[in-house]
Amino acid sequence: MATVSARCLWLLLLWLGVLHSETQHNRVSMNDDLLLPYAKRHGSAHSHRHIRDCQSVVHGNVTYETWPSSQHGGAPLAESSVFVSDARGATQWAYGHMTTVHDPLRTLSVLEPGGPGGCGFNHRATVAETEEAAGCLFSQNAGFFNTSTGQCLGNIVSDGRLVRDSNGVQNAQFGIRKDGTLVLGYLSEEDVTDQGNPFVQLVSGVGWLLRKGQVYINQSIQAECDNTQETGSLNKFVNVVSGRTAIGHDADGKVVLFHVDGQTGVRGMSLWEVANFLKKNGVVNAINLDGGGSATFVVNSSLASYPSDHCKPDARWRCARAVSTILCVHPRHCHPRDCSGHGECLQGVCRCLEGWRGAGCEGLVCQPPACGAHGVCTSGGCVCDAGWSGHNCSEECMQGFYGDSCNQTCACANGGSCDPVHGRCTCRPGFHSDLCQQECPLGFHGASCSEECHCEDQCPCDPQTGSCTNPLREAVNLTLQRAGHCLARKMFTTWRQEEATEIQPYLTEQTWLIIAIGLSSLLLASLVVHLRRAFPASAGHGRISDRRDYSCVPLTDINKVSQPRKAGVEPDDSDSQDETWSLRSGGS
Image (cartoon, rainbow, N blue to C red; front, side):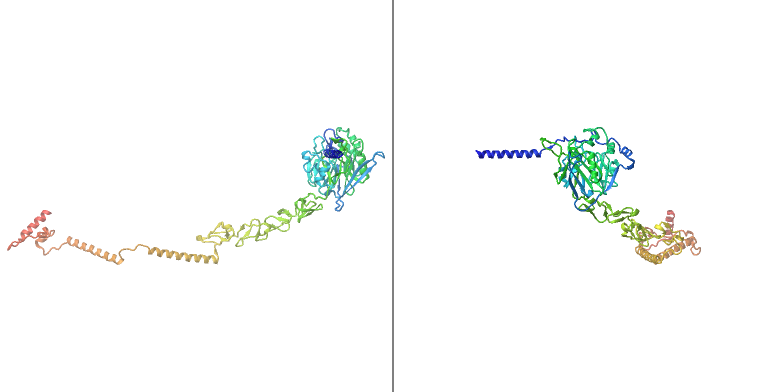
């Protein structure tokens, strides 16, 4: 029985331990210790011009202070001390931390709640949660936020990235510019967005505590005043004791982070006490950050402060509040962390590649106007435009070269010159073609062979000068002679071929001569016959002469039939002749 009771008691204790652990793990802040500077809208009602015009003439027109930051490259990166102060007399003690950052440009960052993008989602996270993800050595809360919506307030730049622009709302600011310059005070919107030497870290507070080593709270109240806030007037916000955080720097340019535990109206420090404490410890310029239940200090992800907010669901405990931005002291980082892509980050220092310079390797060693009007600066020096050369791109390409860095060789023939940029040839008079390889054709001369010759009998002229006196060079004459000889031979050959192919006649010349003589003889004979007929002879013909127009033709020849003759009978010549006459007469 005793054994069973002991076992039950052990299980009960185990269950209570687990329940306590879960309850402790699930405890969250009730956000009950609120210390808000403004009741309605956050920020001063005054413009930057109003603040500039109303400040003391001692400060002229400058509404902020600048100081070169310390760039101590050795160890330690930062030193944190715990203090116990009797700021309010022996009956009231204040506990807190002061952390000195030796190389703020490379080891101090403003971080969004929960990491990059937290402000965009109105996210809130405890300092320990944000610090753990970033690997901070020391961290504390920073800027103000809307307790209802979680919206980040004021200007915020985180590691060179503009997270939020307050559009000129005037509250005290702390920032680090790209060259390491520390800036504290009131900034115009143009100051915040200036890209000549941009901010790499920037956070807004409420209340400028120290300016040039002097307490600046009264002037700050006048500059940042607005309507009353939830805890009373701005004067009460300044005078009430509470948990506080602040940031400033000393004469060496080291950044000082200040944190004091407290509870609004019960314990802690007023802003007057904070300002005097910082002044006593060598701080030159400082501003106030979010306080009250937001005041939190963390070392290596462990809570090192005593929060004032009660926890829920168990109000016997105190819980760290989920806040907005934090200040993080971390191992050295380069700005930007990738050294602008032109170097390597070694222990927070960018080792730039050849041709690049600057803390973030953002600038070229070669800077305009080093390359003049005909080149551009690169990491390798000047890169000249086509047609130009030299270390500063001030020299035109030498004759015969063109292109980028003048590394292309011209191909122009016959003394032609090329364009130094594109390499196009410009031919001497008497030549043409893309590479000036061809002489002007016969009958033309001059630049681009665009002019015609005007010699007598259309003779060719000199292709370069157009002179008709000595028109052709020896080589051209020889060429033309050879061409003429070749042409003549071809012509003679062609003629012989044409003669050989002509159709030969059927009769020779001698034959035609004989034929002509024969025809002439026949013509002559015919003429004689006709003449004889026209002039017949008159003697020796008797009766026949009277009938000279007739001839005697035997009947046997006419009929073509031979008649048989009777024996002893002789034909009668007279009858035959009469008969023949009669026949001829009748025929006539």
